[in-house]
Image: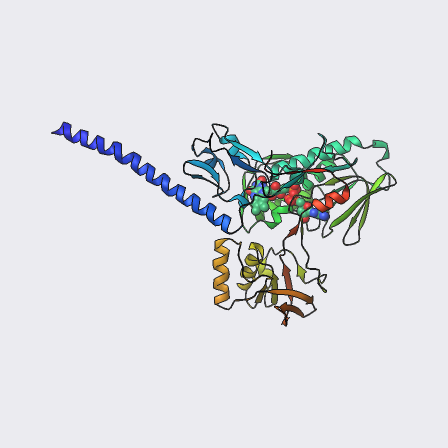
Length: 437
Ligand SMILES: Cc1cc2nc3c(=O)[nH]c(=O)nc-3n(C[C@H](O)[C@H](O)[C@H](O)COP(=O)(O)OP(=O)(O)OC[C@H]3O[C@@H](n4cnc5c(N)ncnc54)[C@H](O)[C@@H]3O)c2cc1C
């Protein structure tokens, strides 16, 4: 009798355990497929930079890539095969590639539909334009640590290329364009190499990190920085990382020429003239472009846009209270800003978008926006365009009708202009990659 019972239990376990495992995996696969479907529906299916392509014929469904990815819900298993389920959220950590036990993953730039421009660089980071160098994500090397390391190396190569005896000339040795991780690394190395240089940014110190969602947990790896020493970081909140960048800059006694968008880099009389949209010029023997890939905020081009109350980024909503605010745009950044500002006491928030509906945004943002509109915290003005920004008002065209709103502050989130046109103006050659490594 006991023997029979043992056989029954063992038999049941033999069927039950795999069945439960199969069910759990099936549920995970369905969840991953739903995430991918939503990403496609929302138009979030194009990765921005380096990303994995998984060969389904080689993949054995081990799930090692999913476990290795530091970002949540970016990779998943669909029908027992690895898949990029949230493509636009992939930031190119590349850990999936290293973790795959059967080498089914290649890391590539661009997709069949969307090309990514990768500049031609020498081993010294110099471009085809003698004296113009590129470091960081613009050159195809994303991630904070990589960009910092490249910035350091590029500045060291630049120092070697300069004639020591001529360092005291009036012309700068180097202008670093971009104060993100690559620019920061370059500036520290330039200081150690006793190069006479300036660092310029259209925004401020921090680069893309400034634009991360609030309190984002940043994953990185330790890196040796000139002057500061070892930066022992693995996981750090965005705000803490930005504080640390400021501390590093103050330890090294460095300052960014902030709010200066470089528009032209021209070679005259043997050196470069770097000119910003704000009218500053820098004369330098070398130029390092560390401008990343996110580009510059797109302007509306309407009268009044140069007013100081107009901003293209919103970091601390608490700073803006008891104000009439206009947010322009229909993407995640615009919606997140409008919702955050509508939660601050005393604000009246209008969200203006040129299309007839808001789509292509994250589900959570859509829900928060719907609730804020329903409760009257945000007034959504669709099919509208800003015609003019005045001192105390804004004028919109709403489907042919003129609407005037009282206004103290305008935030514009109209997307970005990619750096391609700028690179072309400088004369830098690049290759457009469509899903190639
Ligand atoms: C949402 C998100 C999350 C991420 N999370 C992580 C993470 O957890 N870990 C990680 O390692 N990486 C992460 N990354 C990637 C990382 O932020 C980038 O790879 C890194 O910032 C690249 O550094 P960079 O210095 O090359 O360029 P950027 O950081 O992009 O800096 C470029 C700078 O150049 C300036 N600039 C651009 N054009 C001009 C111009 N014409 N004139 C003057 N200045 C100009 C910009 O204002 C900017 O400050 C994330 C990226 C995103 C978008």
